[in-house]
Amino acid sequence: MIITTTPTIEGRRIASYRGIVSGEAILGANVFRDFFASIRDVVGGRAGSYERVLRDGRDTALQEMIEEAQRLGAHAIVGVHLDYGALGKNEGMMMVSVSGTAVTLE
Image (cartoon, rainbow, N blue to C red; front, side, top):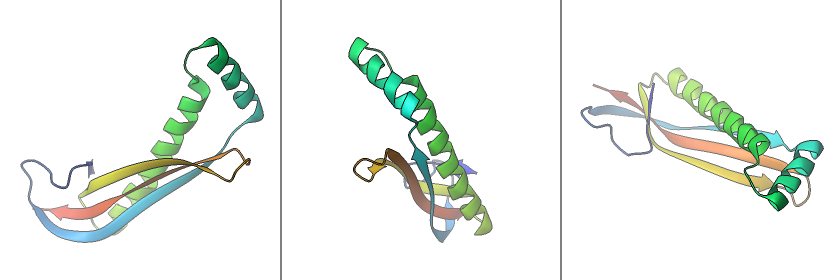
């Protein structure tokens, strides 16, 4: 499955548009990870545990989107957009969502 943020695929012609596809992942933040990340923020450096959680969330959301596109008979997904956000004021939940247009190629 070809996945791209661009509206076209260089060297390939889009034969048909199958529809918008999406995937989401809601991630709960861990209290201990939050604590150690806040210490790291004070002393400097990257919050590796958060980066891993976000990467896993992104991979999960992308996989959901791919599976939806495959059910529609698509060969590719174009115009992909990734979005990250926090849910609730103090719940410590993060969200990763991804969407794009499923297409078939000639």
